[in-house]
Image (cartoon, rainbow, N blue to C red; front, side):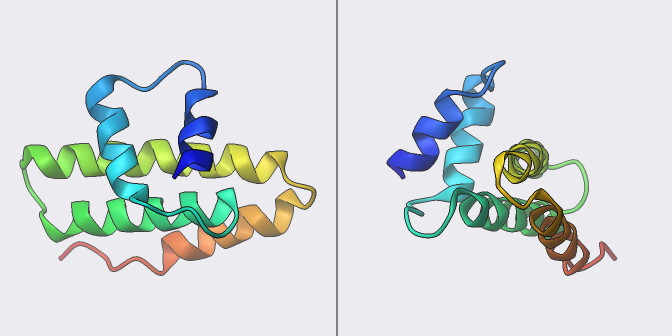
Length: 102
């Protein structure tokens, strides 16, 4: 995870400590694939975790905040890539594949 950790360390402003922990938990030990892939997987995992526990659950709130932060970071990474259009489309497609809250 050193690549993603180093990339996250460069983001400004820095994420608060509890949110940073949730973000690191979301991306787990992912070290393979592009930065975009790691961020996309983290976003989808955090969002799925938040959707699995609807309502006023503190852990769900951190999952949702982590998903929001990772989505923002994924968009930033996409804009830094050579082909931002397809990367941004892939992010949107991944979000549209998420199950709806019942």
